[in-house]
Image (cartoon, rainbow, N blue to C red; front, side):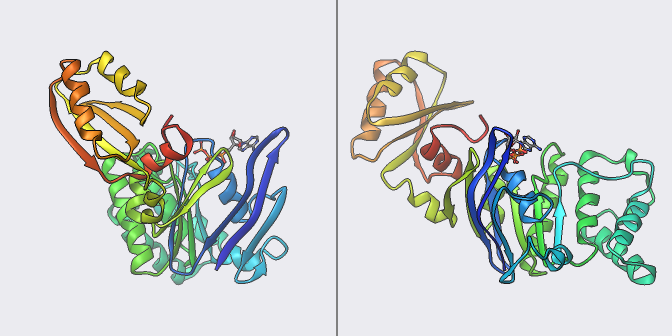
Amino acid sequence: MLEVQGLSKSFKDLQAVKDVSLTLKEGESVGLLGPNGAGKSTTIQMMSTGLTPTSGQVIYNDKDALKNPKQLRRDLGVVPQDIALYEELSAYENLLFFGRLYGLKGKALKTKIEEVLALVGLSDRKKDRVKNYSGGMKRRINIAASLLHNPKVLIMDEPTVGIDPQSRSYILDLIKQLNKENHMTVLYTSHYMEEVEKLCDRIYIMDHGEVIASGTKSDLQNLMQEEETVWVETLEKNQAFKQALEADQTITQVIESDQGYKVIAEKREDLLGDLFDYAKVHHVKLTALAIQTPTLEDVFLHLTGRKLRD
Ligand SMILES: Nc1ncnc2c1ncn2[C@@H]1O[C@H](COP(=O)(O)OP(=O)(O)OP(=O)(O)O)[C@@H](O)[C@H]1O
């Protein structure tokens, strides 16, 4: 339906996006996961024809969308990272304004505004000025604005960054509904792997301007076939214990968290036994020791040696 091929973008000396190819099939929910600065926003700005690539193609329904962007623009809803609303106007007035930009008017526009307000759960607050809204409510109105012209494809740039948990969960449920019930094709950009895991059928992982892996969640987990993720919960932290784990040649990563350590190591039979022994030697009291299914965070760590949120 919508694809980009060999897309690159340079800003002076900086190559922000390098040879990126992505495909969105009709009805799919696709995630673009990567840390800040990975090139996600630049990619989707080019994909939505808002930014001209240095090289590469954007193809919509088998046609060159860079040469002829009209149809794509008509079918596309974009929720940008920055909230663009008129603070002095009410939510309803903002939606009237954006609806008119899309060429909607009269009763059809009013009906559509009521429909999108209900979708984002803000019908009862529609007369309030946007300046009195929380960040999450503003984001929901931004999403409502992107839905006014019945887009077939919805592209969202980190729509849950910096908002309250209630709005976050509302937005995630809404996207799921738009995709599964309203059959909207969705490209969802985030650096939160839990969101992408929950929402997306397929995932592209980006880092330093490149796609470094792609596939379903289980395809990506299979990249870690040779490794095991073990959760080591301890009563207290112990630096010597952590250093001993890090010095072990078969252990690739030790990540400290509130209640213990996550250990990524080569798969081997005596791994758990060795972890017990390290704990014993360093007088560390274990409260749990469990092999875990790798998360997308672990996959990212495996591919780059860094955490997603570094
Ligand atoms: N207009 C611009 N001029 C110069 N550099 C830019 C411009 N837009 C983006 N960049 C740079 O390109 C790189 C990729 O940025 P981009 O915003 O696409 O990343 P991102 O993955 O979306 O991260 P974030 O979530 O922080 O927006 C960054 O180093 C950024 O500073």
